[in-house]
Length: 430
Image 1 (tube, one colour):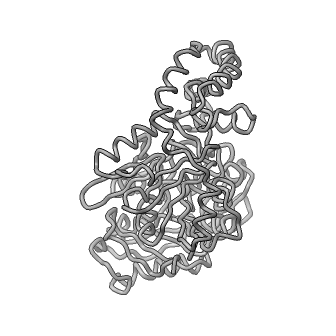
Image 2: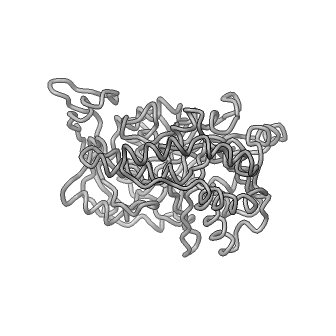
């Protein structure tokens, strides 16, 4: 038995979907513990690509139960569209394969309206949200104004909660953001249309997962976004609104920390970031465009082009510490195939100081200049290689240097988007 947490070790988009998909082969249950449909996990099975925003990536495996934990925020419309899309592809034929915790907070139309209007209003200092209503939903959750999944299934409760909160939201939308007010009857009718279709998925993640643990089952906890976007530990305020680090697996699913065995951090062989905020190793010229083109670096949720840069060891060591990483999964090694020289950031220069730890002060971070070390490239395709020992020497040297810099073993290397373009160096479930 083993319980393994998968987290992004950068600014998101590290390839968590593929890694979770691979590790699901060893798991009995897969749990999503934070975020909402602002995240997108892209999986390629054979020649078919599937993008998931809410449902855990393990849904592509038969016989695995997928759990959406209490730490997630859920848009019922998007959730149903994802369910229908999966069923249309032949997945999720048994509804008992999917469960949603009753404490999951719902994304409401006013959350989306507020999110979009705020970003438009702050055009000169955007956070870079996806406009999906994630932040405002978490605000209401913390402010004890949220409407939960269990409330949706009780019409009288849902109506009462909606009428309690909507006047305040309409006042804010009209008087401050200059937007049209929303109608309670329309929202109620729309969401009650979702209720009966979603009733079969209601459950208790903490209770169900504890039962599974007691039965000796393997559980995989799947995070969204990345450590540098964590609400507490990321590049605040240019972060998401939930806890993306490994501790969020406990609070977002109702499983105690003593039940977790391994924490695997996903990192690209370089770095990308979507949205606003400081990015010390960002490449603004031809090399950045080259990485973007080779890596197809466009957001799975928004389609926005990702900002690209060299691998940042300073930020990665920060992720190692706050997550307690026991292993690294290195993705997109193949994107560097043609490079004669690869650069890696091993420190920051700030004025006359050399920093080897990630600064928490945003103004300091914005003033940091990366200290870059040259690493020899392998200049050949590694996409078809299936054994780590068969990689070019320069490629294995790159992996070993990452291990040396971070103090964490690399347990998986991905050299392409498909399942079979992966090398598992060790199994965290073993």
